[in-house]
Length: 299
Image 1 (cartoon, rainbow, N blue to C red):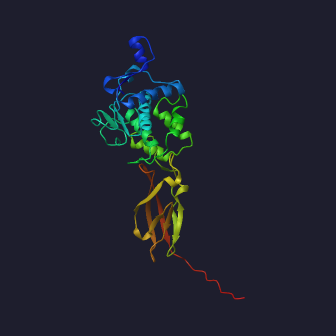
Image 2 (image 1 turned 90 degrees about the horizontal axis):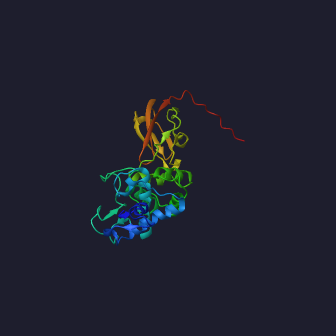
Image 3 (image 1 turned 60 degrees about the horizontal axis):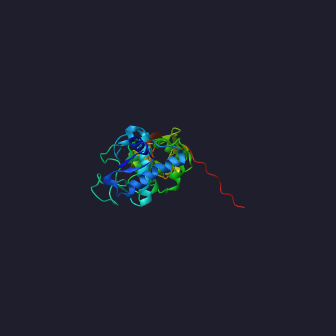
């Protein structure tokens, strides 16, 4: 951002390595840390994206995923080091015209009319920043801090694009649910939808008897990024209200209306907070054929 890549500098004058800061960015502390970020990555992994088309990049230009990772990492680092959410071309923080002399990566997100996805460095930087910071908005619920991010970014050359960073994150043991939400907030969708691993079972209950906790939904649903407690459930349709199907967290209750017999179809939805799946099950309320009365015996 406002700097010449070290390899381009060599091509221009045959010496180096050097970093050249553009004249209109010389007072930007973020530009200095941005370039230091490239060197940190190079020193740690031996990797730095140098493809010539990446030299002329901008926060919300569409490049390729390797350019976006290299530059997005370097855009993120000044935000963490200098303590504010804006990447500044001027003295900062957040000075000059918005989206021209500074880019507030905390406020950019879904629906902002800028290019989206992991081929945009500003989206990668915003995703890293939302994983790092504790000021959450929208889908962002992550507060991981700096160390889990750098543990992966400095791991090796395999993290040459943000999708590979995500693969390493998933294998790291860190929470995936909050991480994928922070990434999604920045228009990058790595989330797998929740699912029903097994079909919900039909149930038969007896007239006039309550059946709390008749189905444990954790036994039937799954999600690649979210644990069972991180999923939520909703009954969306009951074909006959007399069934009185309801939810108690992970549990389905069936408490049919007194005197009612019949069947109903219940539609249930599972959500990981932005994607859903649905399944149905049938409730049959059957009559009680007979009651057995045992004698009371006193000793």
